[in-house]
Length: 120
Image (cartoon, rainbow, N blue to C red; front, top):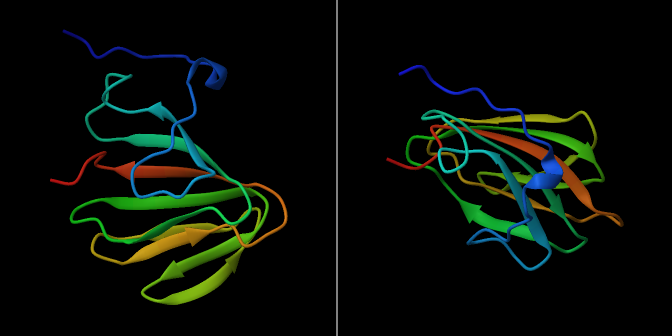
C-alpha cells in the first residue's frame, strides 16, 4: 500500500506542553507517526514564553535540528550557553546534552526536526 501524503494547516493542531518542558513551553506536533504516515520524522513548531525552557537532556539515537524564527534565548549544549536569535540553526547529534531557554522579553518561536521521532 502506498504511503499517504498530507497537507495540514497548523491551526488544526492543538498546542501541547510536552513532558520535561516548563510551564509556558508549548509545541504543535505537526508531523509525527501519530498524525502522519511517517516512520522517520518529527516536525514541530514550538513557542516558549519568557522564562520557559526544556531541561537539559540527551537523546540516545535522535538527531535534531532547531531553527529559530522569533525572539531570543539561550541554547545550552554540554553546559555551554549561547545566545540564539532569528535565523540561528542548531544541529544536535545523538548523545549531546542540550536545553533551550527563553531568556528574552517576548515569545521564543522555533522549528524542531527530529529523526527518528522516538528514542530507540
